[in-house]
Image 1 (cartoon, rainbow, N blue to C red):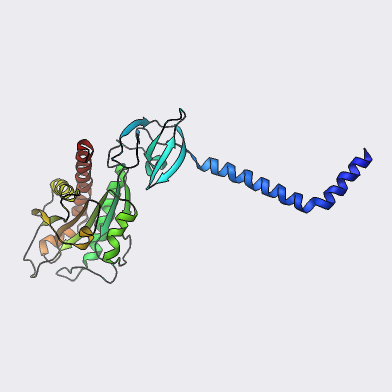
Image 2 (cartoon, helix red, strand yellow):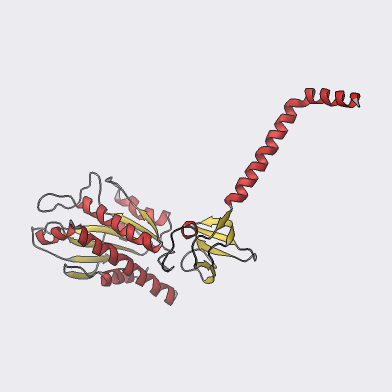
Length: 294
């Protein structure tokens, strides 16, 4: 017995270095495996999430996930997760809703949408000037942030082209929507006329008629119940919507160089009206799209 123990000691002394390396490697591999398995598991936090055949809001509904269900994540794509349920069935669900802990009053197509908001101008690009030389860029950012806050209540995934006072070059703005595989794009601006107090009102612009942009513009414009004149929906040759492949619109929500309009533009009450109207218009548009299968 003593000889055996002595042999083991000699063996350990001789091979302790490679043995230690093997032990460390095995421990690391086991730890990584446990972490990876944990990362690939997720529990549904809120009820009534739609499980779809394919990723995206146009994917055919398969079932509804229940709060507390344990899912295995198979893959991730464009913000969506392909998951496997306990019964081995699979499908796609909006990843941001799976992570959400705050309940939603209702899960709608808007909840599953990725929306890019573009506060016009920024940084050295100040935009239009008001009568008292205030910058358009200030109010487009204020408005976009309010819209983002309202959209967050619906569960929608919102991406901003800018969240601070910085310039985002025009050519890069449409790419934000494309790179994030957005469902919708909205650019916020305030108009300006050649002469002060010459023009008033708000207008909703589209460029592409056949990719959903025109219908999106109609739905958003119809939801706007504002104290300024509604000048309706018009074709607009603006790069940020012209070069956009997703349904895209541009909102001119008043004239910076009109005294009456600017009084509203800088008003938090007016901005809130616009911010609350936008989700209504988006929801109406997406509901029509889902129902018609377009």
